[in-house]
Every structure is written in C-alpha cells, then in structure tokens.
Length: 244
Image 1 (cartoon, rainbow, N blue to C red):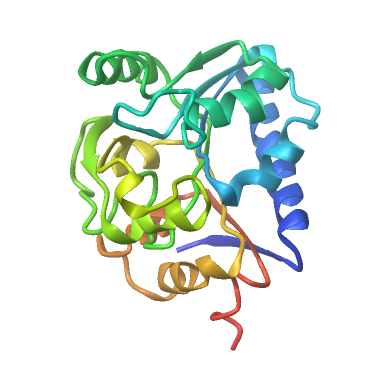
Image 2: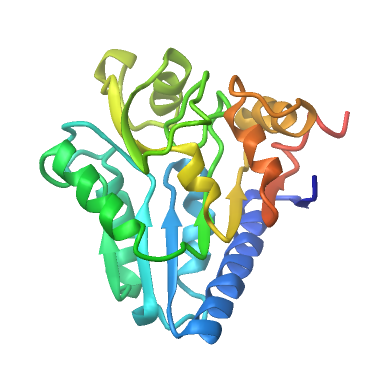
C-alpha cells in the first residue's frame, strides 16, 4: 500500500498544502483532456482547504463538480445543509462549469439523475474527508464495500450524529437527521486520485485506526489505502496518536 502522507504543524497549513495538491491534480486533468471532474466533501475539517482552494489558479469553468452526501429532507436554508455549505464556500466564488448537488428534489429521482451524470466519465479528483468514526462520505461502520450503486440512502449512527453536534451544525443529537443520501465506497474509489484533508485532535483516533488497521468495513477509511493514488493531509493534532 502506497500512502502519501503530509503532516503540517497547523490546520491552516494543512489546508493550504491540500488545496495546492488538489489544484495540481485538477489542472493536470484539464491539460490532458480539456476539462476535469471532481467530487467535494464538506464539514468543519474542510474549512481551511476550501479557503485556499478557491484561490488556486484553476480554470474553474472547465471543472464539473459533484458532491458526496446530504441529509434527507434537510432544507438548503438550514445551517447544516451541505448544498448551502458548498455554494457559500466554493460554487458562488469560483463558478464551476457544471454543478451536481445531492439532496435536490425527490431523493430517488435525485439519486438516479446524479448516477446518470456521474457515470458519463471518470472522476479525476475526489476530495474525501474522514469522519470521527472512520466513515467516508456517510458510510458509517459497518460500511458496504461491495455495493455497486453510486449513491444510496443510508442510516447515520450515534457517533456520526454526535460529530455533527460537536461541530456546531445541530444543537442536539435529536436534531440531526437520521438518514442521508451518500455516495458509496466503490464509487468513491473509482476516482483517479483522492485527496483527504483530516485535521484536528478529534480525528486522531480515526487517523490512527485508518493507518494501522487492516482494510475492514468497521473503519471504512481503511479502504482508501488500497487506492493507487491517495494523498492524506493531517496536522500535528490529527497525527498525535501516530507519533506517540
């Protein structure tokens, strides 16, 4: 397994380095074929990366964007909406050539439309975070590594919901939706390259388990180690259990 790990002293520097790498990979795809297709994740761990990504010298009009997941039946006006998050931190700033959101309209129809568009061509770069419970997208343990759908409605476990409370998106666990539409592991792994930005001490256990455990669906992020081009960006806090 070839893991490219970058460790930075701060989350800010970590986000900057990850954004530079993501832009490099996007520009490589544009140079090769005239356009690039990307998948974006959200959450507090991605703040610094997005602050830097929108400043990178990329021809964003040649970029087609998909995103990983969204809560079922959560209005876009809610502070926790990932559509709102991406519009405010990325889409409305760089104006990509095409945008495909999870969570628009009827869930079944949305999944069908997303799948149709996603599978028209390869995705060049996936920016895939890792949750406190080791999830990728909203594939909580035990994740389904064998499913062939692009997206599915999934149930969110206790630790996942509490992460959303801890990050300040919801006041209590009861306020967190119990279900989300999520891209599934096989589809994530189909990206040509994957960049994971995983800062902060709350992610230290997930990072440790991802790196030290064999590939297993109780730590879904371990699957990323089997990808031929995976870049992991962590700060000192997230790396703390690895360097004891």
